[in-house]
Amino acid sequence: MAHFGKGVVAVVNPQGQVIAELPAGGMKPTNVAFWGSSLYVTEVEKGQVVRLDIGVEGQTLYGLS
Image (cartoon, rainbow, N blue to C red; front, side, top):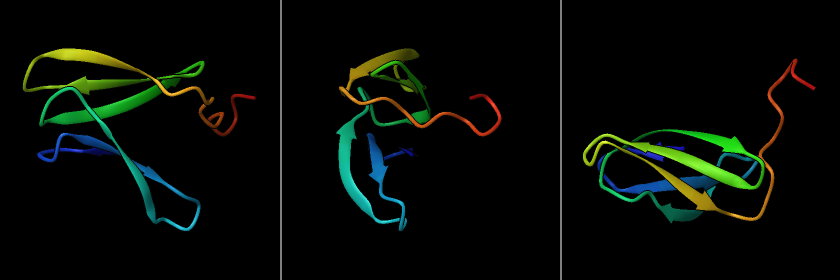
């Protein structure tokens, strides 16, 4: 979950608790998307897309398996 104004992407467990925060490359992240074992973050303050190599695969979207 992108945390706009805090500059992080929150990692949330299935119970909805924040278990980690990853730096987003700027203070205004707006969206995230997985591709393989990387997480891509759009960041509006700097006008960039940041790739975070997190080493885990994202969950497949419902209906796309």
